[in-house]
Length: 421
Length: 96
Image (cartoon, rainbow over all chains, first blue to last red; front, side, top):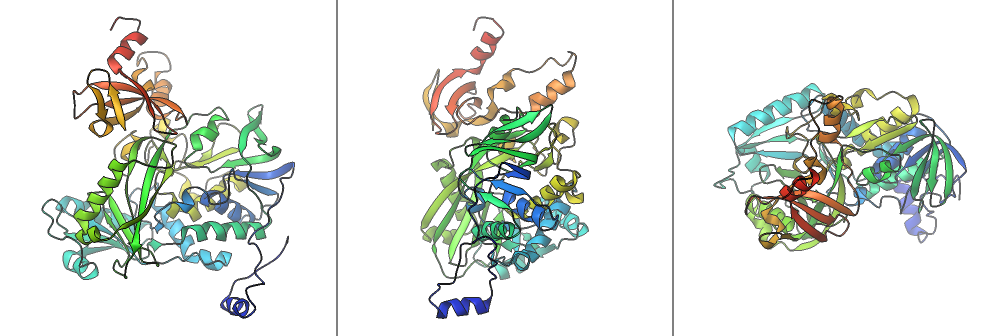
């Protein structure tokens, strides 16, 4: 099976349909770990897989292994609300997320896999004059970083989404900030596309292989201990958001991170009604409609440390109230499923892509609940750091020591309170 | 979640505001040697364990007391609650 190059195309789908779909092969190999690699990436989620992919393709490195405790794409890459966007404010963040947006726009051609990237737009609603000023400033910051942004008045919003509750007594809708290049993507498809691309480029994707310790000699990482034996490595990159604190504790490190649970929800399938992604910041509710018709929506994190991968009912009620306040028609839709994931909530709400005090050990963490949209740039920048020992220009601010040094990137300005970011 | 308040009995966690790790009670001495590093650790770094966690909850919509709640972060089971005042005084070696 090794070295099987399977290209996807419309012709291929047609041919397989006529021949009973007997020609499809598994998307990646299932290799046993070798005793020694140049690069070991810990974590087979979206960010780890993207890192392995760019390390092997763009940076032309070889002898790479990716270790995953369970199966590929088991964590948050398969449990999010699939939103991609680059509508940030601060100079430490916005160029990074815009870089990510540009990678989203080309990734399907690059790794020849349908990730269903759909640039259907994101609309952040405005309710007050103060919020309009803030969003105008944010839109200008986005334009300066090369992204697109458009300030809409209430008539334009009404034309786009007539079903919204424009005359809510507490939060009347006065307009919106629109990013038309934003949208959604098929989250599992992203993981599979990167996994297949990495495998084709020679990366060993090793599943059911839990890292149980780091081999550190004289302040330098030499490899990892795993449930499938000891694996040597020149450099180790950890991308295990949700569990970053637990894994880095194995290397004796404490992180500026708390783990919190975030829930997401999907309704029964409905006729097409929601044109893109709509966010209601005042009530913290965001919603889009999947291609199958289900309304996909979410709200706030639970607000207390959790590793349970599930939330509690008060948050369900809170999210439902947000939905009802924004679009009362949602009250007639039945909830089909809900689920929870673990968020690496950092102390300023922004991520970390940096070296650690242990030479050769590098960290990709702290994605809060915005990790999905960052998947391509996170992988690219982490691969850049692993390959060149220098940060990618768009990720220079995402340092681990920025907290102690006072250079936090706090979009919301709420300080070291992870449950408020 | 129901929090067993030492004075008020079982109270809904929705009445409380969460602050985080109970180690925040141990504020470093701002005048000591190395205070800047100590405060960097105090403000930003957390143990963040999977399992038993001691954490501060404020009974905002109740008697406005601070509690130290012991809770399992993998199951959300609450194992106990004490008044933060008692915990802080005991740590200083004084009587409650």
